[in-house]
Length: 555
Ligand code: C2E
Ligand code: CA
Ligand code: CA
Image (cartoon, rainbow, N blue to C red; front, side, top):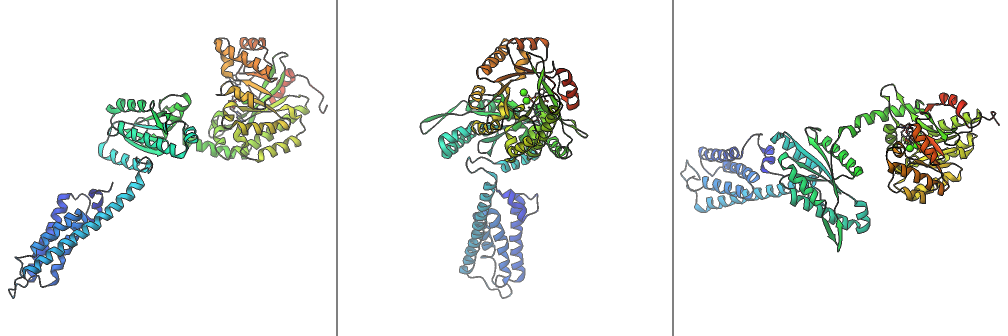
């Protein structure tokens, strides 16, 4: 907000108070008085020097400041000041009264000009620091508040919250943009009514707010108000809308000193809370992906893909009946000279957020198909499965690359499998189904990976063209200890068979688990109990003793 304090630097050295400024103007008026007197009266032009303090007073103290300074100057140049001292000529009353009035009008006008200018600056500042829809501070405003607050208060602890209004997509589709705007406006007002004074609220994005609680003693009350807002209903056009909010929390200075970082960390906590369906989630360092490490990973990975420094490990898939290896799953491995071993779960999601996914996919297909051809040429007719997320299809060229490679490497297409995870297909099931259908029409097999962990498991079976389901290792791991896990695996096997699908159980680690899964009629098993993922040469050795059947090369 534009205040007298913030205008001061334009006119006065820093540190001057209001009192100092009044004294300065008075000094100039007094100085003007003595100058006119010493020079011999008001008939000379020196009298006009008084406009300087008058205009300055108007600029600093607005209309009334200017008018008062004008009247004071008028009086100083008034009845007791002669027109000419040497000739002893008095001023006519009308002359000094008119001058005083002109002084007052000039002071008033300069004050008015300054007020209008200040109002304009204030308007600009408001636009820069507030969100037009909610009327709350925006990020810039919040940053200014934060810097000023730290300078003036030196707090020992503050709570920084990022709050998000959930289901905006659905609300927007159901009620339109106008409805969404009204809901956001209502939520902002409620937040202000409930916690203003005890906290600073800002609107960061349409449905995302930042709340800073400067005093820890207010925290319980503010959090309670946030909680109660989250269970309110807002009626729009007669339709009750449930306001659902989630909150990510970071603490100053425990989690960071910098506002950007605190907001980022609160945001990470919020994302975690969304996944875990928790209303309040505190930032947890262990789940934070360090942005600097991410950048380093992306940098090094670009080089690794170019230099073909990535490798594929292959984990055997065993037919539960015959104990023979009927296929392998290709799992990427990356040992970087600087970063050391980086697990695929850490770097694959990063490639998926960047263009790197395209060269990576190309490399994955080239490498796995070339190796598959080698094994087939050696007489091991095993299937090879690669992992894909829907992001792999971002590049329209992927399908044609696949065609070219399938053509180049003489391998039976039905032995090539693509595993897609349930969570990666969740976004747009219709377009996923179309892509998978295209792949299947080429003869490629499709497996749904991590089966049972998604939110619409049965819908996927219903809508996606599939050949294989891979029951998630989360369930396999617990089948001997948790009856629910056992029931899930058993029913997945039955369901898969009803739908004529091959069922694979992954994550088999013990003989006991192996025996049970075999008993339940599962087709294929995969897990450390049988073999860990092996590099190509070791897998070839493994195949010598565990493969289904060794044909003569070229047969
Ligand atoms: P996933 O597709 O579910 O792969 C199975 C993961 O479980 C592999 O971990 C494998 O090493 C591990 N695993 C296999 N058997 C057992 C077992 O008996 N016990 C336990 N505890 N774990 C077992 P990995 O190689 O670390 O891969 C993790 C995930 O990374 C994979 O999960 C997959 O989603 C992803 N990933 C790996 N390679 C690629 C790839 O080339 N492309 C894509 N898009 N994702 C990949
Ligand atoms: Ca997989
Ligand atoms: Ca899996």
